[in-house]
Image (cartoon, rainbow, N blue to C red; front, side, top):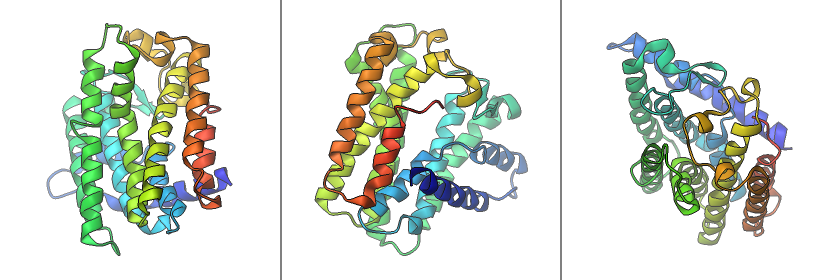
Length: 292
């Protein structure tokens, strides 16, 4: 069920993303080329799929909100372009391809990221069959998750923590913002669009928090144990950049145990749901077995 659902939703997302951005504008074909280069580079498409899956879990049809889901993927892609820049992580590969700045140069890469972020909200505002009140609520969720109290703020902590050993509390704060915030936005926005009850939204919010933590822990583990061929980017970058991770602050074995415990907590958060939340159960269990 997990693989079938995931495959179907990836195909929907890929098709929609191809239709969202033009190949050129009156101002710059090169900018559109750079935006599409990273946006259409593939990947797990977890965030848009989680948005649709959350809507499904509360009894709606997630596919109705494909446009909103793809807007979130555009925000995520912007963050990857900027994260790879020489001033940030200085990575050469992403999703098995040269990073955006390696192909288009630093300046165009910065602007491509900026353009994806701002275009995402234009696309989100065009979501059909949803009240203006709900669209405003979703815009608030996504912008908060992407901004200074979310992803950007987490990235600042990450930059300021380089070459320093930080404590576990700071590490968790950083990753809840840098990685977890956008996962939470995906799941909460899907629930809001799907007209979740307060009980359902509370449960899914807790699930989202645990999902984001489990994802980051396993990401840290893969940076030690993974293969660059499978994960599509160099392994060992955390060590090269002298970054504190769940592995370096504890141990590989302890990090693996923490990931398992966090997944169990995420599953417990879904106890009020029936089979309609099976994808959410399956995807969080997948995190502790993934190799990419």
